[in-house]
Image (cartoon, rainbow, N blue to C red; front, side, top):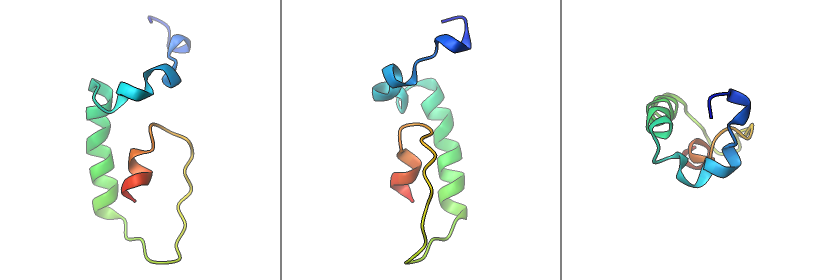
Length: 58
């Protein structure tokens, strides 16, 4: 997998959160969830990035 076009997230998704990249993403997820305030009636647009961990937290 020397070329970025060879990256197939659909094949890596099941293990992504436990991978090196997933653990780096954890810091971003924490930063976002600690600094966003959602109230009843607000909507969140999921852009299909990652495994849905951040959407689940929100």
